[in-house]
Length: 157
Image (cartoon, rainbow, N blue to C red; front, side, top):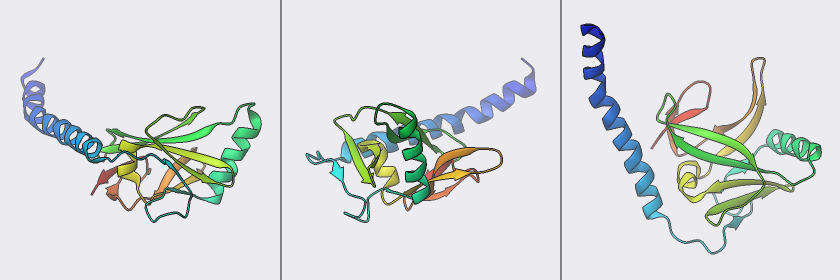
């Protein structure tokens, strides 16, 4: 390893370590603050903290459900990483966990675990088709103060 690359690694190591500790603290503090929620199912308009889905999102989920025999759920979770600190992760799932919150619109269910919910309260999920990709994305998130232009990562307030 050359001297210049070793020097760069030595300069970046404290920054990376601090960022990892900060993300870890944010994730652990949000799970420590969560309250048990016996009724995890919520309707789309039940509160301003509900996670909403656009018509485009609902339409695409119905198309995906029509292609499969089982009823699939859209799962939104938050992971540490991405270019802005946290990143959105979408997946299709067929099970609901004990700590999930369920948001339903026109028969389509969006599932968010309690830790991730703290980062997406009041957010809107959309399905966007562009020339280079088609994907589910969070179009608005009141819990975010900034993010990258591809809308796959964000900075939490």
